[in-house]
Amino acid sequence: MTQHAYQNIPGLPSPSTKDHTPYIDRIVMAADWINKQKGADRRIADAVADFIIYMAFLILDTQEWKQRFTDSQNKAGFFYTDPKTYWKTISFGTATPEVKRICLLCLPNLNPEEHFEKYNIKQTRQKITPQPIPNPNLKIRETPNETKPHLRLVKKPFTPNIPRPLCQEWKLDPRWEKLFPCSTQVFYLLIFRTYRRDTFQKIKKALKNGETYFPWCLTGIKSLSKQLTYHPKSSCRMKNYKDRQIRKSLQQLWDLGFVHRIFRGYEDQGAGKYHIFLNPRMSARFHKSSIDVKKGSTRKKKQPRMN
Image (cartoon, rainbow, N blue to C red; front, side, top):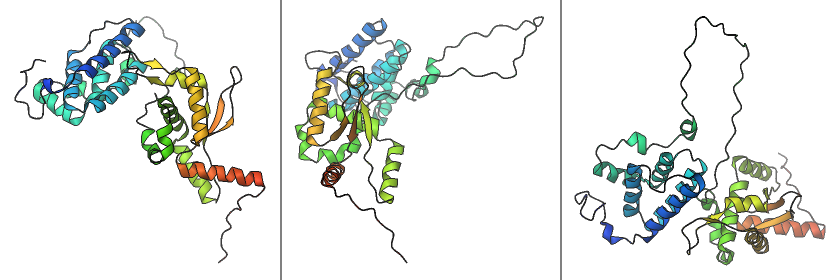
């Protein structure tokens, strides 16, 4: 887009007011990934998607745009089908309502249903095959009980945006500032793995019965390192945290009271098991309970009052 294009669009800043280095770094990173992993052309396969991504960079705050771009690129890579869908998925992740409004003003002929509707991954992955023309002279043997082929379930990809709101109480604790960057990402992933809808139901049920329930999850070093990535300053490509970084992060989280190790997993012997604490109060309560058990005094169960 040139410097003087779309000057009369309200709300659209001038390209000269922003540093384009983050934009170039993210585009190069996404292009390198699709070229290296899928053997596709490095050029953006969809011109409208390219336009939306650039408009989002101009309109949004740089940090917000970088976060949105990285999250949507991870999703596009996880559900990759073809280059066009890859770039369209990235553009969808960066398009806020304000970005959509500006893009529709700049491109009146833009089809919102094609570029602004959420992609149904199952539909895009299905290949349309021509149906054979039936032969009237051929007798077809009917099968009364036809079964549908089993579908392979795809796990929901990890993104820090989901567990981040659950960690607000921890962020107010002084111990949060001591965490390594890798430790923060590991804790986000552990929260993501542990706290689901049924987990909160178990906690509520335990509290209702006057008991305590401390959720836990399995922590395989290999699986954690596969899911956790970071973007180094010296490179444009995403990298995975190494196994030794994951081990140090788990040890730091345990030392600071964010988690508590039930048992340690070893290679070829299964994953480790940790209690994951949602807030400082839960951590304090667990450690107080463990001290009481060691001393021989346990908390008495609440008894209902007699009417």
